[in-house]
Image (cartoon, rainbow, N blue to C red; front, side, top):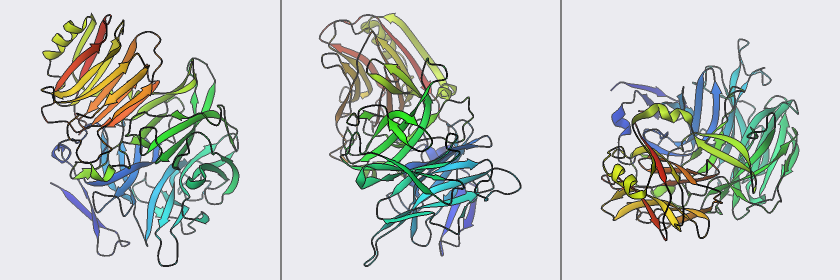
Length: 513
């Protein structure tokens, strides 16, 4: 196998390696086949999602030296379709005792920063630098910038760093974008212990002034981090949009451990105004394993906004039974806003390009449960644990309906269902396979789901990941599972009454590696 080595002077005596990967590098048990995961070592938050010069850039929290958190740096991967990722050398490495925490990347189209060369746009990363406590000195988090003039392949850290220093231990995760309203760059950055997002403005990405603050609001049971602020169109309302403020919470997530909430409102270029009561909490995901989800900067104006999150939970992230990597990203999700009976809500859907990985298909319409299960028993489309199941259920008089997926001999299985009596979608992984590594892993989770008509679910399975999009994307649940190798069963079930007609659209998905 071809191996290309390069040494970084900032790591004395240490060389990092870029290598041409083969499919065998990505075929271990539980390794996702169309979700991004690094070839080796630890990853957590996605960072600096950006589209530039025909490429989607995914930066991510990365430990180049092991499979647990430490030596935080920015890993880097690029893609033309957000499914086939090519892993590149570390973009922003730990240096001089300063780790590289979460942040964002923008395309400086008009060279406001004066970092760009040859009259061409350049990429600018804005990130939190972390210096650990030492002696009498407390730990420190500051905001810093780096820039690249070769499509993100090499980076230079700004000599004037840090660009924003409040001399605080917890002050992190800048989200930066250009505001047409304010005609300046905007930074939304977290004050974790205050449960606030502070908003700054800058003409050049280097000098910043305070514009406003948002919070406390919603859930405040843990530290606020990984803030996001972005506009989305309102479905069915031509020309109308709202702004979404998304905030990570750790601990204090609804499902336990880390989780994320969002607020819907308006942004005038300087301040975000929440359109809902301050006490209201809206959750981006009701599973345990979607955190620090970020959107892309630089997307073409006609492209639907996309969000990617870290698929894990701080309760057990360092204990996951995977090797030689630990950590992976969610499926890229297309976003929009929809007016519902409860108010405007965030809508998520799997990336439409996922269908390009289809390698086998079974469609069953307008049947009863016995006929449906008989047809599913004859297929092997779930054998690789990489498939998408789109289903429509007329719940009828049944009190409980759902799917038993990734099952083996009735002893190992995951349940995805709907309890009509309490009006909740649920996800049960208590018998999903290997659940022994953490007491916080084997759980049954639920989410409020107000059913008006038939129940729809889009379930995407990729070996160790299950993502559920219910009611046309109004409710999302994301969870890891570690099933047995032969857990290929797929079966519909109902309790407490009789369902109406059922439909299932099952597609096997091939590896993107």
